[in-house]
Image (tube, rainbow, N blue to C red; front, side, top):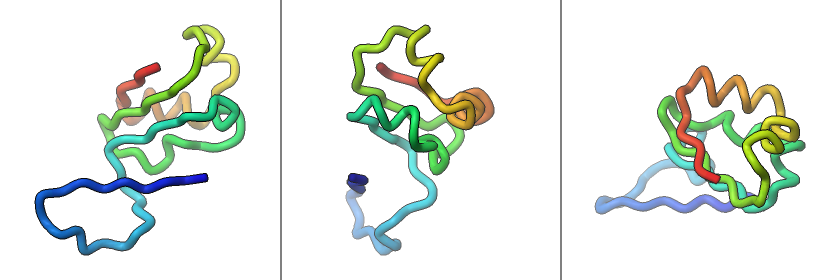
Length: 79
Protein backbone atom coordinates (compact mmCIF):
# COMPACT_ATOMS: atom_id res chain seq x y z
CA UNK A 1 0.00 0.00 0.00
CA UNK A 2 1.23 3.46 -0.85
CA UNK A 3 -0.07 6.43 1.14
CA UNK A 4 0.41 10.05 0.15
CA UNK A 5 0.40 12.67 2.89
CA UNK A 6 0.75 16.33 2.02
CA UNK A 7 1.05 19.30 4.31
CA UNK A 8 0.93 22.98 3.48
CA UNK A 9 -0.33 26.25 4.84
CA UNK A 10 -1.78 26.93 1.37
CA UNK A 11 -4.21 24.86 -0.73
CA UNK A 12 -2.45 22.09 -2.67
CA UNK A 13 -3.53 22.16 -6.30
CA UNK A 14 -1.43 19.36 -7.72
CA UNK A 15 -2.10 15.84 -8.96
CA UNK A 16 -2.58 13.27 -6.20
CA UNK A 17 0.31 11.02 -7.21
CA UNK A 18 3.49 13.11 -6.93
CA UNK A 19 6.74 12.35 -8.76
CA UNK A 20 8.86 14.71 -6.64
CA UNK A 21 8.80 14.25 -2.88
CA UNK A 22 10.97 15.34 0.04
CA UNK A 23 10.28 12.44 2.42
CA UNK A 24 9.59 8.71 1.95
CA UNK A 25 8.77 6.37 4.82
CA UNK A 26 9.10 2.59 4.61
CA UNK A 27 7.16 0.68 7.28
CA UNK A 28 7.62 -2.77 5.76
CA UNK A 29 11.24 -3.96 5.56
CA UNK A 30 10.40 -6.51 2.85
CA UNK A 31 9.75 -3.56 0.47
CA UNK A 32 13.49 -2.79 0.55
CA UNK A 33 14.06 -5.94 -1.52
CA UNK A 34 11.17 -5.37 -3.94
CA UNK A 35 10.61 -1.70 -4.74
CA UNK A 36 12.79 1.29 -5.63
CA UNK A 37 11.34 3.47 -2.88
CA UNK A 38 13.86 6.27 -3.42
CA UNK A 39 13.06 6.87 -7.11
CA UNK A 40 10.85 9.94 -6.59
CA UNK A 41 12.86 11.50 -3.74
CA UNK A 42 14.30 14.94 -4.43
CA UNK A 43 18.00 15.61 -4.00
CA UNK A 44 18.77 15.93 -0.28
CA UNK A 45 15.47 14.19 0.59
CA UNK A 46 14.82 12.07 3.66
CA UNK A 47 14.30 8.29 3.57
CA UNK A 48 12.91 6.87 6.84
CA UNK A 49 13.09 3.08 7.29
CA UNK A 50 11.19 1.45 10.14
CA UNK A 51 13.07 -1.82 10.68
CA UNK A 52 15.34 -3.66 13.10
CA UNK A 53 18.16 -4.12 10.55
CA UNK A 54 21.72 -3.06 11.28
CA UNK A 55 23.59 -0.96 8.73
CA UNK A 56 25.26 -4.11 7.33
CA UNK A 57 21.94 -5.94 7.06
CA UNK A 58 20.34 -2.97 5.26
CA UNK A 59 23.22 -2.93 2.80
CA UNK A 60 22.64 -6.61 2.01
CA UNK A 61 18.87 -6.44 1.47
CA UNK A 62 18.44 -3.03 -0.19
CA UNK A 63 18.11 -2.87 -3.98
CA UNK A 64 21.23 -1.59 -5.77
CA UNK A 65 19.13 1.11 -7.49
CA UNK A 66 18.19 2.50 -4.06
CA UNK A 67 21.83 2.46 -2.93
CA UNK A 68 22.75 4.47 -6.04
CA UNK A 69 19.89 6.92 -5.39
CA UNK A 70 21.06 7.41 -1.80
CA UNK A 71 24.57 8.23 -2.96
CA UNK A 72 23.73 10.25 -6.11
CA UNK A 73 20.89 12.26 -4.55
CA UNK A 74 22.71 12.79 -1.23
CA UNK A 75 19.71 11.44 0.70
CA UNK A 76 19.37 11.47 4.48
CA UNK A 77 18.66 7.98 5.83
CA UNK A 78 16.94 7.43 9.18
CA UNK A 79 16.43 3.92 10.56
